[in-house]
Image (tube, rainbow, N blue to C red; front, side, top):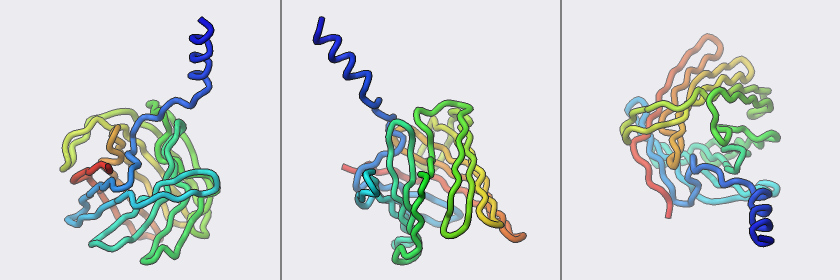
Length: 197
């Protein structure tokens, strides 16, 4: 009886294991299609930021690295702590308040906000979990959580949605950008997913 109470007490104080929404293993590769082009996101390493262990997600277009995101996942969500862009990663943004991509566990109707700086501009983001839905992309059909987002950065505004499939990550992204009278829309869909070993 005493052992049962001790084990149960230990289980209560441990963080619950987060759902595997984003497979963070070195060697994982997501291949995406957008407007006839193909790009890859690869887990290329790990780095500690403060006391938090992050995974480095490197975006490659035509074989060249264009951006790195430093991402952590825990029981509260999938969070980006740093972003580096440019040919050699010279433009670095450290997020004092981590940028939460998906709040865990996912709950339909959940809303969360982020405020901070992207580069040297003040920015805000508002997210809403719209619930689960079936989404069909070149890699297959997935039941995924749809998260809508609205980001304002200086004079620029972005609205869109990401679809997160358990065990895979983002399978579809739709975004609309508007800045100084110019508009741009993009749709990015998963072509293939290769989990790391």
